[in-house]
Length: 302
Length: 241
Image (cartoon, rainbow over all chains, first blue to last red; front, side):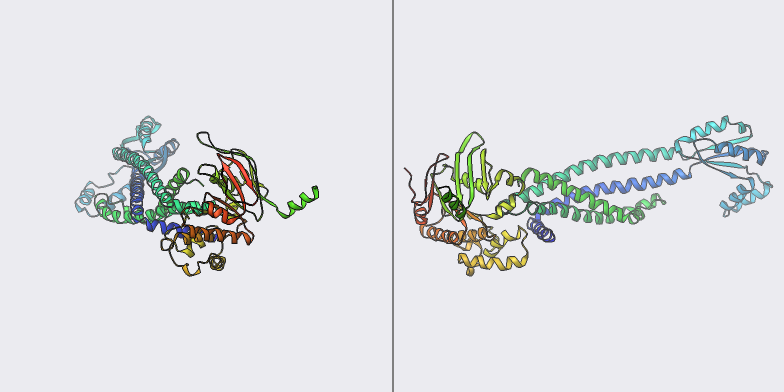
């Protein structure tokens, strides 16, 4: 068995090297497909990450009137917590609000001055409500206006990020659509190109195949070199494509981090290096093997 | 009488049996018709006839390249219709094949061409290193082991093909017009080699339309015409009416 694998593997390496240009063009097309698929994968993944972050930051702040008692607010908190759409509710008392305000404006002496001049605590107690789903904020807002404590509410500060989320959602959707259709297109091209490469190898090895059959080579011995050929194409292409991805991300990352500081394409790539490489190799050898099998089915009569 | 026949059977075990075999190719071309034929172990049989008489088809049925349309071919008692599907590669190792066009690999040396047959059937390296020189010695090509096919004469190339056919120590050698591309002297040498191989115990089936070499063999001759056996001489000369 080991003998079979080493001999046939050597045979396929030899044939790949012998048909240099064919191998180069096959591998280039495979690299291109894998590269495009992975670029879209990285983009949608980072965009999703971004979206998650923005979604987390989104909330509704319900400000209570200055004279609202804490007991009322806490009762309101339990009521809001019971709503289906609500993920979490955080109570921020007047005092905490003041602390926060002072902290965020620590470098603004004018603001702090004016705060002193007003005297006392001008800030309102609030409930910070986070929804399970960004689309639920509308409903939560409506529910709060209808709630029993609505008279105690001074104002509802509703969801500044809604537009951004919607925009991002549609961007992600578009990227995914383009990615999937381009991915499918290139997958089809990859299959055809490995199919063709293996077909040509079968053709150039016609004589060897005939002799192998006549001298009683086992079917595996005749077929394995072509399967190995497909796998080798796949693995080489995926390694090249991962390297290419690294180079291009390094180039793009600096631009992206300038415009959107929270997003790091590079970090994503490095953190998921194993996964990306693994998927690429799997996908690459999948294209290779399926293309090879298709060619063998059609042209290799054993 | 019955006893005698039994003894005869014991002596010459039937290796190949054609049982009412017909072969039709696509387009209703009848290549062989109602062939009944026994070939015994250790026999040397020449199959003669004009081009298109069905010689090659008969041989192809033996090494199971083609399947019989009607009837059954038995090899060593096993029906080839079954062998073809289940055990073709093992069957091919029992049969050495030799052709008019040699079928050597041009980029491999004489030694490598012979070794190739063992490599692709999964023989261990030690066995290859031991067997190949022995076989090359039998066909008299030891000194040419490192040459490439294009550096050899036609006769020598055919000897390489015969060496490759012998390397599995097959039960039978099937030679389809082995001298078709050779001059008379080289042809005689090849036929002498086949006779020697036969004397060492291997069954030989030789298809040829070369009168000289069939006469030289002076063994059993089977005459085919339009896909039918028209004569079967136990020991004779090439005669076509």
